[in-house]
Image (cartoon, each protein chain N blue to C red):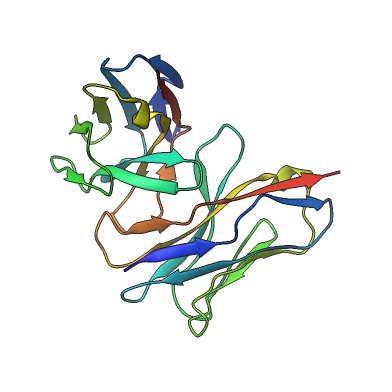
Length: 113
Length: 112
């Protein structure tokens, strides 16, 4: 089946620390991979995506590389800010149906000054 | 553009009561979705509408009904609320089913 496993939180980091949030997936077929971010009190918004192997998605200083050999899509940022405090969701989509987006359970990140 | 809007933002119901959650999008998207978000479980798809005039069940449809009123609006109805339906509900839309989804701000529902 299709599923996403991401590291459990919560994660607490000091400002300017390096961030990694692990995400691995299983998929029937060739998925597209996404990271969504949910800021407090808001809905999810797309942070970055990658649609084929070895693609790197990037946005707002965050990066993730689609690794087919390890079925992973880890999220990284070199220097986090307090404003990055949010819940991060890894997700995959397979095929062209409307019910094809599968989310991980989310990882809460808190950045302290 | 307002994007995806949802009403209400908060609601408290008693067991057995009914209510409708409203969702509207102004991006001319074809596909719309209803998810629920529960702690430790991520987002789970309740119902979706791939295009105007069609609706289909998602992963957790029991206890819910939906109506795609027109291209802009997609409502979710709880006919007889149960405590297990306490959750945060998100509406989303996308241009086509397999593209990026845009989410509303959510409705926090508590069923006592």
